[in-house]
Image 1 (cartoon, rainbow, N blue to C red):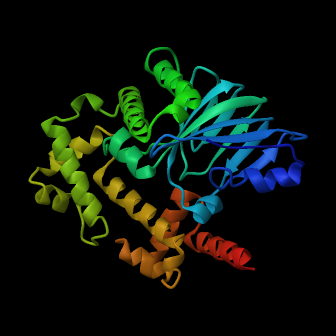
Image 2 (cartoon, one colour):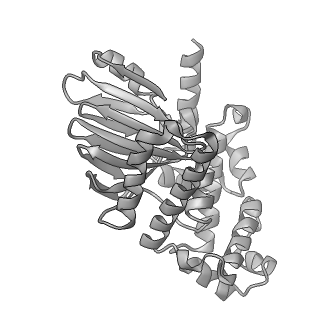
Length: 318
C-alpha cells in the first residue's frame, strides 16, 4: 500500500490535496492539520482510504478539462458525514450509506466533520459496460441506504481496506469482479435500469442498437428512422425501448455528440482544430446552435473551456 500522512498549513494543503486522486479545489474549514491518503491494491478498480479534518471539495469544469477523468467514484463513510451536490442531486452521506458520484460532471462535497471514508474508483468504460450494462441513462450522483445489498457492499469495501494487500493479484481480480457485480445489481435494481432483463432478447436488441449508435452518432444524416431501419425494428418499437430508460433516441444522439465534442476540446492533440471543425466532425451542422447546446449541457461555452485548457497548459510549461 502507498500511504501519505502530513501535518501542514493551508498552502501545503492546497498543493498536496488538490491532486490527491484527481483535480479538485479543496477548501479547509479553519485550521487544517491532518489529511492521509492510502491507496489500496485492487486490480483494475482503485480503492482509497482517506482520513481528514473537515473540508470542502469542489470539482469544476476546468479540473475535468485538465485531467480528463470521467471515472465513477463509489463513496462510503466509516466515520463522519458529507453533504454531496451534483447537478440536481443533493443528499447527506453518513456511515451505513453508499454514494456514487460521476467524476466527469462538476460537483461539491462538504466533509462537515473529521472523518474516515473509502472511495472506490471505477474506470468510465468499466462502469458503463459492467455496472450499467450499456443501459441508456444519465447517471449522476446517487445514494443507497438501508440494509441488504448496500450494507453488503459497504462491508466488503471495509474488509478490502484491511485485507487487500494480503491477496494475490489473481485474488484481487476475482474479488474486484464480485464487487463490480454487486454494485451493478445495486445500481440496476434500485434505479430502474431493468437489470432483470439482462440476457433477454430485448436487452440483446438494445445492445445491438447502442453499438450501432456508438459507431454512427457523428453521421449528419442519422435519424430515428435510419437507426430503426439499420437494426430491423419499427420506429415505434425503437422509441419504446428508449422510453423505458427515460430518454429519447434524439436526446441520446445529441448528448453523445456533445460529450464527444467536449473530449476533443480538452484534448491537446486536437488544439489545431477549430471549434466549428470539431462540432461538424461530431454531427452538428450549426456551430452557433452547438455552442448554445454545449453551454446548456456543461455550464461553460466551448471557447471558454478551450481557453481555460490553453491557459493551464501555458502555466504548466512556464
